[in-house]
Amino acid sequence: MAVKEKQPNVFFIPEHKKDTIIDYAVKGGLLLLLLWGGKKFYNQWRTNQQEKKAGDDPSTQQAIKFRTAMEGAGTDEKTIFETAKEITDWDAVTKAYRNLYNTNLTEDLKDDLSAEEYQKFFNIINLTEKSPGKPGKSKVDSNKGRIVVSKASVNIRKTPRATGSPTKDKLLVFGRSNIIITVDKSIAIGVATGRTSFDEKAEPSGVLFIEVQVLKKGGTIKDSYTAWVAASQVETISGAQYKEKKYPALSITKAQYDDASSSLNGTDYVNYHQEIITHVPADIMDDKFHVVGRAESEMILGFPIMELKTKDKTLLKFLTIDDTKRWVDKQFVTIKSVNQ
Image (tube, rainbow, N blue to C red; front, top):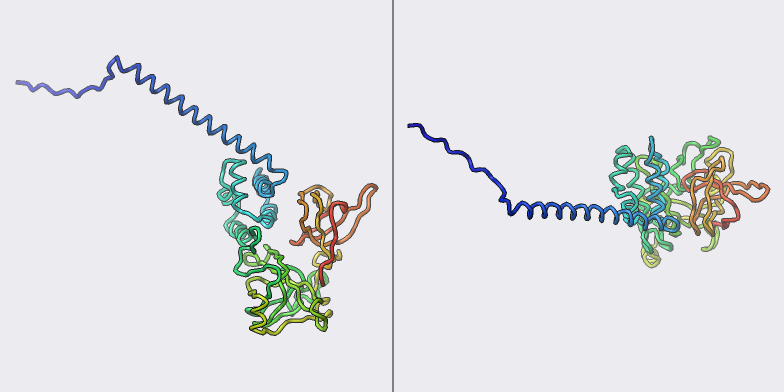
């Protein structure tokens, strides 16, 4: 006798439940659509709110600069590095970038920069980022008034650039060493001014410099020269600690100071005894007088080189702290003497 093959059960929806399932499906679809639309609306609202801050919020401006530098066929690495040096709050910049473009700034930079450039970028961020009332992200406290002491042999430089050496480049007209003197370990170099500068061109991945007031030889305690030292080669102590430890203090002569090169940009004379500070927001121009950026009020632009008078204004040529020549309308800035 033939065995009847058992047929598998067939799933089916009862007629009285079909309308209910369809109703749930429609409602679920509408809910998903509403959620998607709500998220899209929120993202657009968030972008609009962030864009409103572009006029007076440095973090938003920096986020826009990064996006502009990465858009198009090629990446503008120079703008990326220059913008990195302006940042005082990295978290605020990344938040502004996400609000504006709904994407991750760190990942976008990683896609656009080479591995070496990516490392250099975050070296700049980690060494120059500050928070209100706090020193840069370095192990060295560079706040104004701290006594700077050498913890190894260190070059005392006239400008914040790793240029030349004490024994070579002396005969090169436009490439002389900017080293004033080299001191040994455990020397009280001077007093920190609170200013720092990052030389991203220095090998292998940039150098953070601290500005120091160095005593003028034969002068009083009020007489000093402005100089720069690599943060990695020094430590800072309080005035009380200095009196206790009694480190020998450095003093330099006028001849030593003058012998060190400060103008490393061809025939232009750079006046490092003065600095240019904006007293209102000002457009910054390149050598063809094209606007390449905008500086906020109370920003140190650099050092004066020369003036150019036109029919209706006086333009001021200056050297930025990273050794770039730029122009600004003189009416928007104040020139102040740097203590020597």
